[in-house]
Image (cartoon, rainbow, N blue to C red; front, side, top):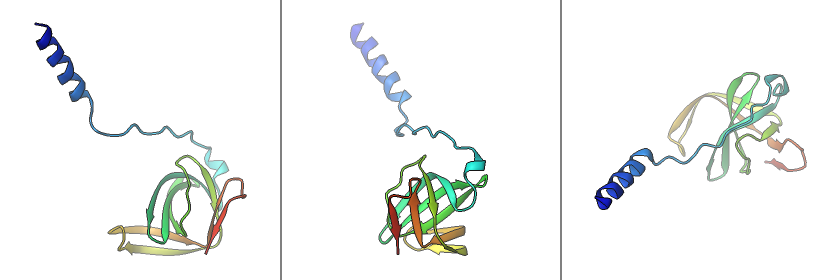
Length: 117
């Protein structure tokens, strides 16, 4: 009897686990503070030579690409001059971006840490 209860408990525990890592909660910054070349990091993808960064900016999601930089989800960043590419196909990601901003530099909110080409 005790073994069957233990087996049922283990099965319930395994069934409740979906294999996904817990998602870090993001404290949303008001859109009014994310205007111009400033955004809140939603996700990042690193590939050789580039970091792709998805940010919330002016009430919409925008993808940036620039030199490799470590930024965290939820962090506020800003960026320098950018070139807009439409329907950009990344061969490294096998993904097409409707719009992608290739940025010259990414700055962490404090502007103390800078990455540039």
